[in-house]
Length: 481
Ligand code: NDP
Image 1 (cartoon, rainbow, N blue to C red):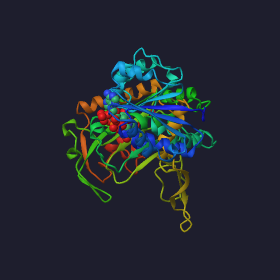
Image 2 (cartoon, rainbow, N blue to C red):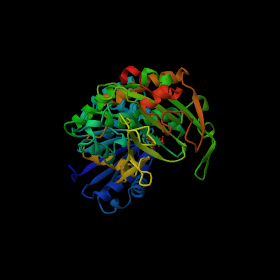
Image 3 (cartoon, rainbow, N blue to C red):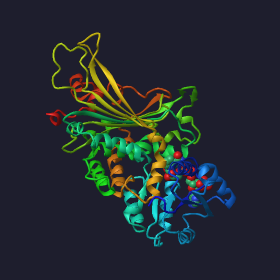
Protein backbone atom coordinates (compact mmCIF):
# COMPACT_ATOMS: atom_id res chain seq x y z
CA UNK A 1 0.00 0.00 0.00
CA UNK A 2 2.98 2.32 0.43
CA UNK A 3 2.72 4.94 -2.23
CA UNK A 4 -1.05 5.17 -2.58
CA UNK A 5 -2.37 8.50 -1.35
CA UNK A 6 -3.79 8.59 2.14
CA UNK A 7 -5.11 11.14 4.60
CA UNK A 8 -4.11 11.79 8.17
CA UNK A 9 -6.87 13.65 10.02
CA UNK A 10 -5.61 14.76 13.42
CA UNK A 11 -8.17 15.51 16.13
CA UNK A 12 -6.46 17.81 18.65
CA UNK A 13 -4.34 19.35 15.92
CA UNK A 14 -3.36 22.38 17.99
CA UNK A 15 -1.85 20.24 20.77
CA UNK A 16 1.65 19.37 21.89
CA UNK A 17 1.76 15.82 20.49
CA UNK A 18 0.81 17.05 17.02
CA UNK A 19 3.39 19.78 16.68
CA UNK A 20 6.22 18.24 18.70
CA UNK A 21 6.08 14.58 17.64
CA UNK A 22 3.50 13.65 15.01
CA UNK A 23 4.14 16.24 12.32
CA UNK A 24 7.96 16.32 12.65
CA UNK A 25 8.00 12.50 12.53
CA UNK A 26 5.83 12.58 9.42
CA UNK A 27 8.34 14.96 7.85
CA UNK A 28 11.28 12.68 8.69
CA UNK A 29 9.41 9.62 7.44
CA UNK A 30 8.59 11.22 4.12
CA UNK A 31 12.14 12.46 3.71
CA UNK A 32 13.39 8.93 4.33
CA UNK A 33 10.65 7.26 2.24
CA UNK A 34 9.59 9.82 -0.36
CA UNK A 35 7.23 7.42 -2.18
CA UNK A 36 4.17 8.38 -0.15
CA UNK A 37 1.59 11.09 -0.70
CA UNK A 38 -0.18 12.23 2.45
CA UNK A 39 -2.85 14.86 2.96
CA UNK A 40 -2.77 16.25 6.49
CA UNK A 41 -6.08 17.52 7.80
CA UNK A 42 -6.58 19.03 11.24
CA UNK A 43 -9.44 19.55 13.67
CA UNK A 44 -9.51 21.01 17.14
CA UNK A 45 -11.14 23.38 19.52
CA UNK A 46 -8.88 26.32 18.57
CA UNK A 47 -10.41 28.70 16.05
CA UNK A 48 -7.57 28.51 13.51
CA UNK A 49 -7.85 29.66 9.92
CA UNK A 50 -6.38 27.89 6.91
CA UNK A 51 -3.21 30.02 6.98
CA UNK A 52 -2.49 29.14 10.60
CA UNK A 53 -2.88 25.44 9.89
CA UNK A 54 -0.74 25.68 6.77
CA UNK A 55 2.01 27.34 8.81
CA UNK A 56 1.75 24.82 11.68
CA UNK A 57 2.14 21.90 9.28
CA UNK A 58 4.84 23.62 7.25
CA UNK A 59 6.92 24.52 10.33
CA UNK A 60 6.66 21.07 11.88
CA UNK A 61 6.91 18.87 8.80
CA UNK A 62 9.63 20.79 6.98
CA UNK A 63 10.71 20.19 3.41
CA UNK A 64 8.27 17.47 2.23
CA UNK A 65 5.47 20.10 2.24
CA UNK A 66 7.31 22.03 -0.44
CA UNK A 67 8.04 19.06 -2.64
CA UNK A 68 4.39 18.01 -2.86
CA UNK A 69 4.70 14.79 -0.84
CA UNK A 70 2.55 16.34 1.88
CA UNK A 71 -0.57 18.24 0.97
CA UNK A 72 -1.92 20.48 3.68
CA UNK A 73 -5.64 19.86 3.86
CA UNK A 74 -8.35 21.75 5.73
CA UNK A 75 -8.58 22.62 9.39
CA UNK A 76 -11.96 22.38 11.13
CA UNK A 77 -12.64 24.20 14.38
CA UNK A 78 -15.00 22.07 16.44
CA UNK A 79 -15.68 20.48 19.77
CA UNK A 80 -15.01 16.81 19.08
CA UNK A 81 -17.35 15.79 21.88
CA UNK A 82 -20.32 17.35 20.07
CA UNK A 83 -22.06 14.50 18.18
CA UNK A 84 -23.43 16.80 15.45
CA UNK A 85 -20.04 18.45 14.84
CA UNK A 86 -17.94 15.29 14.77
CA UNK A 87 -20.67 13.46 12.86
CA UNK A 88 -20.48 16.11 10.14
CA UNK A 89 -16.68 15.89 10.10
CA UNK A 90 -16.57 12.13 9.59
CA UNK A 91 -19.01 12.43 6.68
CA UNK A 92 -16.16 14.21 4.85
CA UNK A 93 -13.67 11.33 5.27
CA UNK A 94 -12.12 10.09 2.07
CA UNK A 95 -10.96 6.48 1.59
CA UNK A 96 -7.71 5.52 3.35
CA UNK A 97 -8.00 7.98 6.20
CA UNK A 98 -6.27 7.61 9.53
CA UNK A 99 -8.31 9.38 12.20
CA UNK A 100 -5.75 10.22 14.90
CA UNK A 101 -7.10 11.02 18.38
CA UNK A 102 -4.36 13.38 19.64
CA UNK A 103 -6.59 14.53 22.46
CA UNK A 104 -6.58 14.38 26.25
CA UNK A 105 -7.75 10.84 27.16
CA UNK A 106 -11.06 11.96 28.71
CA UNK A 107 -11.85 13.99 25.59
CA UNK A 108 -11.00 11.01 23.37
CA UNK A 109 -13.47 8.89 25.29
CA UNK A 110 -16.22 11.49 24.87
CA UNK A 111 -15.41 11.89 21.17
CA UNK A 112 -15.78 8.12 20.65
CA UNK A 113 -19.13 8.26 22.44
CA UNK A 114 -20.14 11.19 20.24
CA UNK A 115 -19.35 9.04 17.18
CA UNK A 116 -21.77 6.27 18.24
CA UNK A 117 -23.75 5.15 15.22
CA UNK A 118 -21.57 7.07 12.74
CA UNK A 119 -20.73 5.30 9.50
CA UNK A 120 -17.06 5.49 8.62
CA UNK A 121 -15.56 4.48 5.27
CA UNK A 122 -14.60 0.79 5.32
CA UNK A 123 -10.87 1.34 5.40
CA UNK A 124 -10.75 4.07 8.06
CA UNK A 125 -8.10 3.42 10.71
CA UNK A 126 -8.58 4.81 14.23
CA UNK A 127 -5.33 5.74 16.00
CA UNK A 128 -5.61 5.90 19.78
CA UNK A 129 -3.01 7.44 22.07
CA UNK A 130 -2.01 6.31 25.52
CA UNK A 131 -3.22 6.08 28.19
CA UNK A 132 -5.89 3.77 26.83
CA UNK A 133 -8.56 3.93 29.55
CA UNK A 134 -7.62 4.26 33.18
CA UNK A 135 -8.28 0.75 34.42
CA UNK A 136 -9.31 -2.62 32.98
CA UNK A 137 -13.01 -1.79 33.14
CA UNK A 138 -12.73 1.56 31.33
CA UNK A 139 -10.34 0.03 28.76
CA UNK A 140 -12.88 -2.71 28.04
CA UNK A 141 -15.69 -0.20 27.69
CA UNK A 142 -13.57 1.90 25.31
CA UNK A 143 -12.72 -1.22 23.31
CA UNK A 144 -16.41 -2.04 22.96
CA UNK A 145 -17.21 1.48 21.78
CA UNK A 146 -14.37 1.39 19.22
CA UNK A 147 -15.19 -1.99 17.78
CA UNK A 148 -18.75 -0.79 17.19
CA UNK A 149 -17.21 1.75 14.77
CA UNK A 150 -14.54 -0.27 12.94
CA UNK A 151 -13.18 -3.85 13.21
CA UNK A 152 -10.36 -4.52 15.68
CA UNK A 153 -7.79 -4.86 12.90
CA UNK A 154 -8.35 -1.20 12.02
CA UNK A 155 -7.80 0.10 15.55
CA UNK A 156 -4.22 1.19 16.17
CA UNK A 157 -3.46 1.69 19.87
CA UNK A 158 -0.21 3.57 19.63
CA UNK A 159 2.70 2.43 21.74
CA UNK A 160 5.68 4.22 20.29
CA UNK A 161 8.00 1.86 22.20
CA UNK A 162 6.96 -0.74 19.67
CA UNK A 163 8.64 1.41 17.00
CA UNK A 164 9.80 -1.15 14.51
CA UNK A 165 13.56 -1.03 14.72
CA UNK A 166 13.59 -1.62 18.44
CA UNK A 167 11.14 -4.48 18.09
CA UNK A 168 13.11 -6.05 15.28
CA UNK A 169 16.39 -5.71 17.15
CA UNK A 170 15.00 -7.69 20.02
CA UNK A 171 13.18 -10.18 17.86
CA UNK A 172 15.92 -10.57 15.30
CA UNK A 173 18.55 -11.39 17.87
CA UNK A 174 16.33 -13.75 19.76
CA UNK A 175 14.63 -15.58 16.91
CA UNK A 176 17.25 -15.71 14.17
CA UNK A 177 20.23 -16.99 16.15
CA UNK A 178 20.34 -20.64 17.12
CA UNK A 179 22.38 -19.91 20.21
CA UNK A 180 19.63 -18.11 22.18
CA UNK A 181 16.63 -20.40 21.94
CA UNK A 182 18.04 -23.16 24.19
CA UNK A 183 18.92 -20.66 26.93
CA UNK A 184 15.85 -18.38 26.72
CA UNK A 185 14.09 -19.62 29.85
CA UNK A 186 14.23 -19.88 33.62
CA UNK A 187 16.63 -22.77 33.20
CA UNK A 188 19.39 -20.34 32.24
CA UNK A 189 18.13 -16.80 32.78
CA UNK A 190 18.34 -15.38 36.23
CA UNK A 191 16.53 -12.07 35.86
CA UNK A 192 15.37 -9.53 33.31
CA UNK A 193 15.58 -5.79 33.93
CA UNK A 194 13.61 -3.39 31.71
CA UNK A 195 14.60 0.16 32.51
CA UNK A 196 13.62 3.58 31.22
CA UNK A 197 15.45 6.26 33.23
CA UNK A 198 15.01 9.86 32.14
CA UNK A 199 17.24 12.76 33.11
CA UNK A 200 14.40 15.14 32.22
CA UNK A 201 12.23 16.30 35.09
CA UNK A 202 8.57 17.32 34.78
CA UNK A 203 9.08 19.75 31.84
CA UNK A 204 5.73 21.53 32.36
CA UNK A 205 3.71 18.34 31.93
CA UNK A 206 2.00 18.48 35.34
CA UNK A 207 -1.47 18.54 33.81
CA UNK A 208 -0.98 15.01 32.53
CA UNK A 209 1.82 13.57 34.62
CA UNK A 210 0.58 14.54 38.08
CA UNK A 211 -2.44 12.30 37.54
CA UNK A 212 -0.48 9.49 35.91
CA UNK A 213 2.89 9.12 37.65
CA UNK A 214 5.81 6.99 36.54
CA UNK A 215 4.06 3.63 36.80
CA UNK A 216 1.07 4.51 34.62
CA UNK A 217 3.10 6.72 32.29
CA UNK A 218 5.69 4.11 31.41
CA UNK A 219 5.30 0.70 33.05
CA UNK A 220 1.59 0.18 32.35
CA UNK A 221 2.03 0.75 28.66
CA UNK A 222 5.48 0.71 27.14
CA UNK A 223 7.52 -1.43 29.51
CA UNK A 224 4.92 -4.19 29.83
CA UNK A 225 4.88 -4.37 26.03
CA UNK A 226 8.64 -4.89 26.06
CA UNK A 227 8.19 -7.59 28.70
CA UNK A 228 5.65 -9.25 26.41
CA UNK A 229 8.16 -9.33 23.55
CA UNK A 230 10.94 -10.67 25.72
CA UNK A 231 8.82 -13.36 27.31
CA UNK A 232 6.54 -14.51 24.47
CA UNK A 233 6.80 -17.88 22.79
CA UNK A 234 8.42 -17.61 19.33
CA UNK A 235 5.59 -16.82 16.89
CA UNK A 236 5.25 -18.72 13.61
CA UNK A 237 5.15 -15.44 11.66
CA UNK A 238 5.45 -11.76 12.41
CA UNK A 239 1.94 -11.18 11.09
CA UNK A 240 -0.28 -9.20 13.41
CA UNK A 241 -2.28 -12.21 14.60
CA UNK A 242 0.68 -14.47 15.43
CA UNK A 243 2.81 -11.78 17.00
CA UNK A 244 0.04 -10.27 19.08
CA UNK A 245 -1.33 -13.68 20.12
CA UNK A 246 2.12 -14.58 21.45
CA UNK A 247 2.59 -11.28 23.26
CA UNK A 248 -0.91 -11.36 24.74
CA UNK A 249 -0.36 -14.90 26.06
CA UNK A 250 2.79 -13.75 27.86
CA UNK A 251 0.95 -10.79 29.36
CA UNK A 252 -1.89 -13.05 30.53
CA UNK A 253 0.67 -15.09 32.47
CA UNK A 254 2.19 -12.00 34.09
CA UNK A 255 1.48 -10.95 37.65
CA UNK A 256 3.15 -9.08 40.48
CA UNK A 257 5.93 -11.07 42.08
CA UNK A 258 4.46 -13.50 44.64
CA UNK A 259 1.21 -11.59 44.23
CA UNK A 260 2.58 -9.30 46.90
CA UNK A 261 2.71 -5.67 45.74
CA UNK A 262 3.79 -4.52 49.20
CA UNK A 263 7.18 -6.22 48.80
CA UNK A 264 7.49 -6.21 45.00
CA UNK A 265 6.73 -2.59 44.15
CA UNK A 266 8.62 0.60 44.97
CA UNK A 267 7.81 4.27 44.50
CA UNK A 268 9.55 7.56 45.15
CA UNK A 269 9.51 11.19 44.06
CA UNK A 270 12.33 13.61 43.56
CA UNK A 271 13.28 16.45 45.83
CA UNK A 272 15.38 19.45 44.77
CA UNK A 273 18.70 18.59 43.20
CA UNK A 274 20.91 19.02 40.18
CA UNK A 275 20.90 17.05 36.93
CA UNK A 276 23.96 17.88 34.83
CA UNK A 277 24.13 21.67 34.84
CA UNK A 278 20.43 22.17 35.64
CA UNK A 279 18.97 22.96 39.05
CA UNK A 280 15.76 20.99 39.48
CA UNK A 281 13.15 22.08 42.02
CA UNK A 282 11.45 19.54 44.21
CA UNK A 283 8.64 17.77 42.31
CA UNK A 284 6.18 18.93 44.95
CA UNK A 285 7.12 22.55 44.14
CA UNK A 286 6.82 22.22 40.35
CA UNK A 287 4.14 24.37 38.74
CA UNK A 288 0.76 22.65 38.51
CA UNK A 289 1.66 19.82 40.90
CA UNK A 290 -0.71 18.91 43.73
CA UNK A 291 1.64 17.35 46.32
CA UNK A 292 -1.28 15.79 48.15
CA UNK A 293 -1.81 13.40 45.22
CA UNK A 294 1.44 11.67 46.23
CA UNK A 295 2.42 11.12 42.60
CA UNK A 296 5.58 9.05 42.16
CA UNK A 297 8.29 10.17 39.74
CA UNK A 298 10.18 6.87 40.01
CA UNK A 299 8.59 3.44 40.08
CA UNK A 300 9.92 -0.06 40.11
CA UNK A 301 7.94 -3.30 40.08
CA UNK A 302 8.98 -6.95 40.05
CA UNK A 303 6.80 -9.26 37.96
CA UNK A 304 6.72 -12.96 37.27
CA UNK A 305 5.60 -14.54 34.01
CA UNK A 306 4.02 -17.61 35.53
CA UNK A 307 4.39 -20.24 32.85
CA UNK A 308 6.57 -23.22 32.01
CA UNK A 309 9.26 -21.07 30.41
CA UNK A 310 9.60 -18.32 33.00
CA UNK A 311 8.27 -19.28 36.43
CA UNK A 312 10.72 -18.09 39.06
CA UNK A 313 12.47 -15.42 36.98
CA UNK A 314 12.07 -11.86 38.28
CA UNK A 315 11.25 -9.31 35.57
CA UNK A 316 12.09 -5.92 37.06
CA UNK A 317 10.46 -2.94 35.33
CA UNK A 318 11.63 0.53 36.28
CA UNK A 319 11.08 4.06 35.09
CA UNK A 320 11.54 7.53 36.48
CA UNK A 321 12.45 11.17 36.00
CA UNK A 322 15.21 13.54 37.15
CA UNK A 323 17.74 10.70 37.22
CA UNK A 324 21.44 11.31 36.54
CA UNK A 325 21.33 10.17 32.92
CA UNK A 326 19.01 8.88 30.24
CA UNK A 327 19.30 5.12 30.42
CA UNK A 328 16.96 2.96 28.46
CA UNK A 329 17.78 -0.72 28.35
CA UNK A 330 16.80 -4.34 28.68
CA UNK A 331 19.28 -6.43 30.65
CA UNK A 332 19.10 -10.22 30.61
CA UNK A 333 21.27 -11.72 33.32
CA UNK A 334 22.18 -15.38 32.96
CA UNK A 335 22.43 -17.76 35.86
CA UNK A 336 25.91 -18.57 37.15
CA UNK A 337 27.55 -21.65 35.66
CA UNK A 338 26.75 -24.88 37.52
CA UNK A 339 30.36 -25.41 38.48
CA UNK A 340 33.31 -23.03 38.35
CA UNK A 341 36.55 -25.03 38.39
CA UNK A 342 38.77 -24.50 41.39
CA UNK A 343 41.64 -22.33 40.34
CA UNK A 344 39.64 -19.66 38.53
CA UNK A 345 39.65 -16.55 40.69
CA UNK A 346 37.14 -13.65 41.02
CA UNK A 347 34.10 -15.88 40.67
CA UNK A 348 31.39 -13.84 38.92
CA UNK A 349 27.90 -13.49 40.41
CA UNK A 350 26.25 -14.28 37.09
CA UNK A 351 26.76 -16.34 33.97
CA UNK A 352 27.02 -13.34 31.65
CA UNK A 353 24.68 -10.55 30.60
CA UNK A 354 22.97 -9.52 27.41
CA UNK A 355 22.04 -5.83 27.29
CA UNK A 356 19.95 -3.95 24.76
CA UNK A 357 20.32 -0.22 25.11
CA UNK A 358 17.76 1.83 23.22
CA UNK A 359 18.21 5.09 21.37
CA UNK A 360 20.79 4.79 19.92
CA UNK A 361 20.34 1.04 19.91
CA UNK A 362 23.29 -0.99 21.10
CA UNK A 363 23.62 -4.64 22.02
CA UNK A 364 26.23 -5.63 24.55
CA UNK A 365 27.14 -9.14 25.52
CA UNK A 366 28.99 -9.11 28.81
CA UNK A 367 31.12 -12.23 29.07
CA UNK A 368 33.60 -13.46 31.66
CA UNK A 369 37.13 -13.94 30.40
CA UNK A 370 40.49 -14.50 32.00
CA UNK A 371 42.95 -11.69 31.66
CA UNK A 372 46.24 -12.05 29.84
CA UNK A 373 48.40 -10.91 32.72
CA UNK A 374 46.70 -13.03 35.33
CA UNK A 375 45.63 -16.13 33.41
CA UNK A 376 43.31 -17.47 36.14
CA UNK A 377 41.69 -14.17 37.14
CA UNK A 378 38.23 -13.66 35.66
CA UNK A 379 37.03 -10.26 34.55
CA UNK A 380 34.09 -9.02 32.51
CA UNK A 381 34.54 -7.98 28.90
CA UNK A 382 31.84 -6.40 26.71
CA UNK A 383 31.21 -7.39 23.10
CA UNK A 384 29.37 -4.43 21.61
CA UNK A 385 27.27 -4.11 18.44
CA UNK A 386 25.91 -0.70 17.40
CA UNK A 387 22.40 -1.07 15.92
CA UNK A 388 21.50 2.43 14.79
CA UNK A 389 19.26 5.24 16.01
CA UNK A 390 16.26 3.06 16.77
CA UNK A 391 14.28 4.62 19.59
CA UNK A 392 14.73 8.18 18.39
CA UNK A 393 12.72 7.30 15.32
CA UNK A 394 9.90 5.59 17.17
CA UNK A 395 7.01 7.87 16.10
CA UNK A 396 8.27 7.67 12.55
CA UNK A 397 8.02 3.90 12.69
CA UNK A 398 4.53 4.12 14.16
CA UNK A 399 3.36 6.44 11.36
CA UNK A 400 4.99 4.20 8.79
CA UNK A 401 2.80 1.28 9.92
CA UNK A 402 -0.24 3.41 10.52
CA UNK A 403 -0.32 5.00 7.10
CA UNK A 404 -0.12 1.50 5.63
CA UNK A 405 -3.06 0.39 7.80
CA UNK A 406 -0.84 -2.30 9.38
CA UNK A 407 -1.70 -2.86 13.06
CA UNK A 408 1.04 -5.40 13.84
CA UNK A 409 2.95 -2.99 16.03
CA UNK A 410 -0.03 -1.64 17.88
CA UNK A 411 -1.53 -2.87 21.12
CA UNK A 412 -4.50 -5.22 20.66
CA UNK A 413 -7.71 -4.81 22.72
CA UNK A 414 -7.00 -7.73 25.05
CA UNK A 415 -3.41 -6.60 25.67
CA UNK A 416 -4.59 -3.12 26.64
CA UNK A 417 -6.95 -4.62 29.20
CA UNK A 418 -4.33 -7.11 30.49
CA UNK A 419 -1.82 -4.35 31.21
CA UNK A 420 -4.31 -2.62 33.50
CA UNK A 421 -5.23 -5.95 35.13
CA UNK A 422 -1.55 -6.65 35.86
CA UNK A 423 -1.04 -3.32 37.65
CA UNK A 424 -4.29 -3.12 39.58
CA UNK A 425 -3.02 -4.88 42.76
CA UNK A 426 -0.14 -2.39 42.93
CA UNK A 427 -2.43 0.58 42.49
CA UNK A 428 -4.63 -0.79 45.28
CA UNK A 429 -1.64 -1.33 47.58
CA UNK A 430 -0.31 2.17 46.89
CA UNK A 431 -3.70 3.72 47.48
CA UNK A 432 -3.97 1.87 50.79
CA UNK A 433 -0.54 3.13 51.88
CA UNK A 434 1.03 -0.35 51.91
CA UNK A 435 4.07 0.93 49.97
CA UNK A 436 5.79 4.08 51.29
CA UNK A 437 6.41 7.00 48.93
CA UNK A 438 10.16 7.44 49.30
CA UNK A 439 12.26 10.42 48.21
CA UNK A 440 15.41 10.88 46.17
CA UNK A 441 17.30 14.03 45.29
CA UNK A 442 17.04 14.97 41.61
CA UNK A 443 20.23 13.85 39.88
CA UNK A 444 20.70 10.75 42.05
CA UNK A 445 19.84 7.15 41.14
CA UNK A 446 16.87 6.90 43.47
CA UNK A 447 16.51 5.30 46.89
CA UNK A 448 18.96 2.57 47.80
CA UNK A 449 18.14 -1.09 48.02
CA UNK A 450 15.72 -1.33 45.10
CA UNK A 451 15.98 -4.46 42.93
CA UNK A 452 17.40 -2.69 39.88
CA UNK A 453 20.43 -1.36 41.76
CA UNK A 454 23.73 -2.27 40.20
CA UNK A 455 24.66 -5.71 41.32
CA UNK A 456 21.03 -6.82 41.16
CA UNK A 457 21.40 -10.13 42.87
CA UNK A 458 21.03 -13.32 40.90
CA UNK A 459 18.70 -15.82 42.48
CA UNK A 460 21.11 -18.18 44.12
CA UNK A 461 23.45 -15.52 45.43
CA UNK A 462 20.48 -13.63 46.79
CA UNK A 463 19.11 -16.65 48.56
CA UNK A 464 22.47 -17.14 50.23
CA UNK A 465 22.75 -13.49 51.21
CA UNK A 466 19.20 -13.45 52.58
CA UNK A 467 18.96 -9.66 52.58
CA UNK A 468 15.69 -7.83 52.94
CA UNK A 469 15.83 -6.42 49.42
CA UNK A 470 16.69 -9.79 48.06
CA UNK A 471 13.63 -11.23 49.72
CA UNK A 472 11.46 -9.11 47.45
CA UNK A 473 12.93 -10.52 44.28
CA UNK A 474 13.99 -14.03 45.18
CA UNK A 475 11.62 -16.76 44.13
CA UNK A 476 10.40 -19.16 46.74
CA UNK A 477 12.80 -22.08 47.06
CA UNK A 478 10.20 -24.48 45.74
CA UNK A 479 10.02 -22.65 42.41
CA UNK A 480 13.77 -23.16 42.00
CA UNK A 481 13.98 -26.76 43.02
P1 NDP B 1 -2.62 18.65 24.54
O1 NDP B 1 -3.49 18.99 25.70
O2 NDP B 1 -1.39 19.45 24.29
O3 NDP B 1 -3.43 18.65 23.18
C1 NDP B 1 -4.73 18.22 23.06
C2 NDP B 1 -5.40 19.07 22.00
O4 NDP B 1 -6.78 18.71 21.97
C3 NDP B 1 -5.33 20.55 22.32
O5 NDP B 1 -5.09 21.24 21.16
C4 NDP B 1 -6.71 20.82 22.88
O6 NDP B 1 -7.12 22.16 22.70
C5 NDP B 1 -7.54 19.91 22.01
N1 NDP B 1 -8.85 19.66 22.60
C6 NDP B 1 -9.16 19.51 23.90
N2 NDP B 1 -10.49 19.31 24.04
C7 NDP B 1 -11.02 19.36 22.79
C8 NDP B 1 -12.32 19.24 22.27
N3 NDP B 1 -13.40 19.00 23.07
N4 NDP B 1 -12.51 19.33 20.94
C9 NDP B 1 -11.46 19.55 20.12
N5 NDP B 1 -10.20 19.68 20.55
C10 NDP B 1 -9.97 19.58 21.87
O7 NDP B 1 -2.26 17.12 24.72
P2 NDP B 1 -1.04 16.35 24.02
O8 NDP B 1 -0.94 16.75 22.61
O9 NDP B 1 0.16 16.45 24.88
O10 NDP B 1 -1.51 14.83 24.16
C11 NDP B 1 -2.53 14.28 23.32
C12 NDP B 1 -2.56 12.78 23.58
O11 NDP B 1 -1.30 12.22 23.24
C13 NDP B 1 -2.78 12.41 25.05
O12 NDP B 1 -3.55 11.24 25.10
C14 NDP B 1 -1.39 12.13 25.56
O13 NDP B 1 -1.39 11.24 26.64
C15 NDP B 1 -0.75 11.50 24.34
N6 NDP B 1 0.70 11.61 24.31
C16 NDP B 1 1.31 12.83 24.35
C17 NDP B 1 2.68 12.92 24.31
C18 NDP B 1 3.37 14.24 24.32
O14 NDP B 1 4.61 14.24 24.41
N7 NDP B 1 2.66 15.35 24.27
C19 NDP B 1 3.54 11.71 24.23
C20 NDP B 1 2.80 10.48 24.15
C21 NDP B 1 1.44 10.45 24.20
P3 NDP B 1 -6.87 23.17 23.95
O15 NDP B 1 -5.42 23.18 24.23
O16 NDP B 1 -7.38 24.47 23.44
O17 NDP B 1 -7.68 22.62 25.09
